[in-house]
Length: 196
Image (cartoon, rainbow, N blue to C red; front, side, top):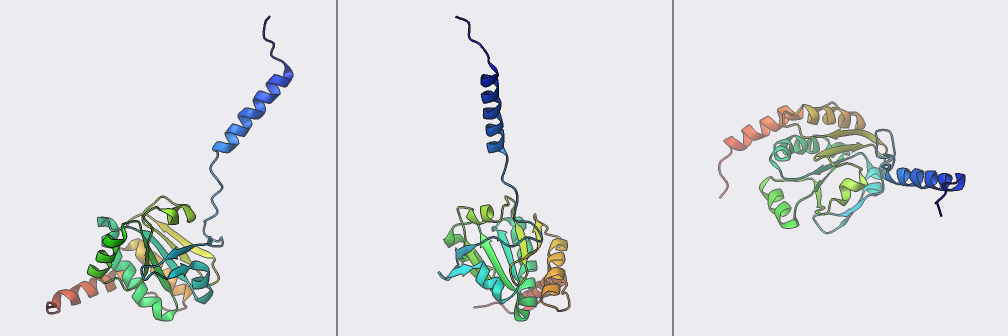
């Protein structure tokens, strides 16, 4: 007996191919400029829960998904300068590191990180914010609207200065040249007497 290819078989095959194709399509990106920030909670370095919604209820938030690699390390001074320039105006900076807790704790101590930070070795934060790029910087306005997403490593400081300008606008103050501030801070540290 010869197998027959009927219209019903063709229709069923077409539906199966369509379903398989739809399953392979990536989910629509919802973490975009102008959208509401996703729900995000993480345990901070101090052991307390950090809730993005609670932070953005108080003021703007800069979320930096990062690591301790050479490029991110070179950028760190710029983001420390952003934090220092605008934290008294209401900006909260949250750095999320994709490194082991002990390594981040030592790194934070050595680099005098005085901003809110957390550790996410599994990379769940990157999934929540729909990015694979490290670093990714998300500037979120009071109330939770994403104002800016800056991705990639830029040791030159240009990207950090763009983030600084947008942060200044959110806290309604003059923009600070964080590249210049970071350089001034390094010069001060070199001139300071060594700590015993």
